[in-house]
Image 1 (cartoon, rainbow over the protein chains, first blue to last red):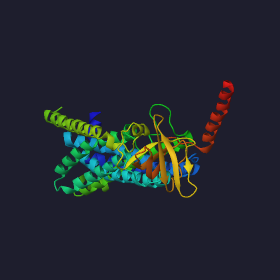
Image 2: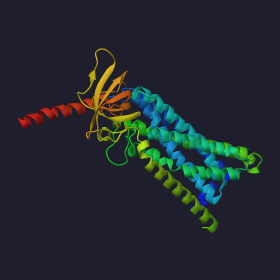
Image 3: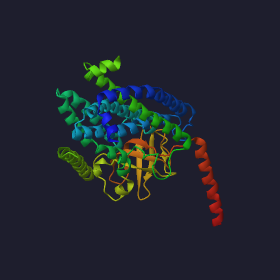
Image 4: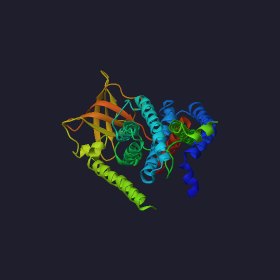
Length: 243
Length: 153
């Protein structure tokens, strides 16, 4: 068990692992995205009140869900980096930030596009939307902080602290629609109790959420692999790896 | 675990716990400002300020929508089933504005207790279903109600 975890800290092992995983994940993720998008956008029925405009849910919800989950991945990598000083954890933290920022941005933009025809406004400063905007700035902050230091170890330390402090925002985003009066509707998919979304719309949505998780893993692995290529371009193991 | 790592882990956990506590206390103290709107019950109880822009949110009461014949003015009642506020608005309403649906109106509370809105937004609920399912549900409800009325007779 420990030996297996230790392998993740080894750049040569991780480089091989990432290369193999990317090769397998790429077709699976593309297939799931196409399948989920076609199912959701073409075959799922329209909503009884919103008509077809609700279909943005198949992009909006998966990107928001994975943006939140991705933050925990980044913060966990930050914790490992801070406590155990493992360089691969720094690499992981740095690789997650741009992917998370992009997903948060997609969630905000698709939400605005949906909000205009549904609510009548592109943007409202309600608790859910504002806390999601803070998440976007946290991701951007981690990216900027990494670039602000010349010393990589110092940069990783600062980013780890920022991402750990930022974790407080995640439950706030998740519960914002229940704790405060907001314009954003409460969650339709519930872990306990009856789901408020019809099965014919729920299944393609779940496919898209799974596909976005896969997409997140794929993009993070590609980013980490790229960073390893840049860091170890002079190393013998990388040269032999690339043949 | 190495004592040095243990110490760093303790510090990291403390950072998370203390910052969560700080943010929790701040948002608890500011909870009134984080709420997007006042429920009608608070407005009826006089908890909402009269002289500045606020929002009111709730359900549009069935059968309460009155449309002016001269201009785009609409008057309707908003309720949270504990209080009701009369809202007047001049302008184009969102497509999803309807009786029995959620709404958030921003504007000013007038001294007579009614609300003059400058913007009306539709608040969508979390229910998503195809039109056939909605019709079936509606059908089941309207099939139910005459039966219950018949029982009363």
